[in-house]
Length: 351
Image (tube, rainbow, N blue to C red; front, side, top):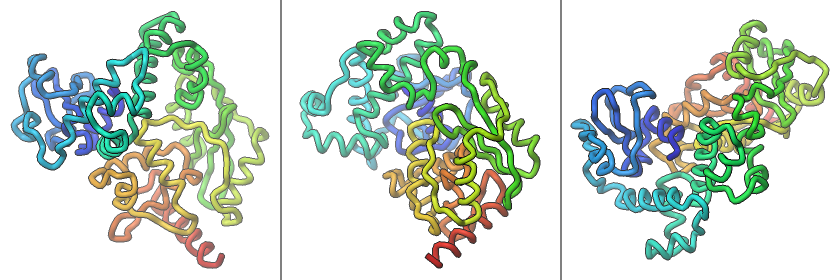
């Protein structure tokens, strides 16, 4: 199960997963839909189930606010998609193709793909990859033997895993198993017209860009986010990257193409990619991004993903505004957001 993704859905009251999963609370013995308006429980008390019948068999009773044991007339394919997810999860060693899934569920491949992506937000193949990686990450935490963890997660060989692992974990399996304590992060802090700018990099790319009023606070935030990493200040490495970022802030360069080393959930990655697609000098509303991602009810989740963006400026969350045109929030200060938008709008109109 993709517990990190599901927990995010619970926090954001994401209706897109209603009917795909339910969450149960150990302390109350009650299970709910992800969109349930009730007070959110502690993460340690939560368990996830693919169906409400599974939750009931485990001894949990339905919530009287969201009625999770009722079939939703708005999403008649939710149970179907839940069955497809369970089928994919059950095929650990040999992930099924789209054609195989379509045959098993007596559907056309195009209809299955379209329906699955509309409800889950990703394709069946992407779901299978994320599910397998989530299983592998769990195995890494439980197993000392990496090779054993690889095969228990359903990978046919170590090479098949290592081909994809860098982009997914952002580090090798061994380093991930050791909580990233061998990851080396180099950072620099410089002054700019937005205050102080911290840029942190790994050997793969930029892992953090932060803005603030005090350098020591930026360093503290960085070390808290990467507790197990080796963090070193170096003002000389990647000076060309820093120059591109400064040129962007000064309006001399629009959307610099720089390598990024970011880690996030599937949904966060989708949102961050959507932000990078917003043209220089333009803005989008949270509702417009939710619509473009096929998740019209996920505006709050979009806002949370923007707030979790680790790379200011290059992933331009400052270009997202409320439906009424007001700026909304910004992790690095609303005045900076306004200054960035005004500067980009002026430059965009002159180009």
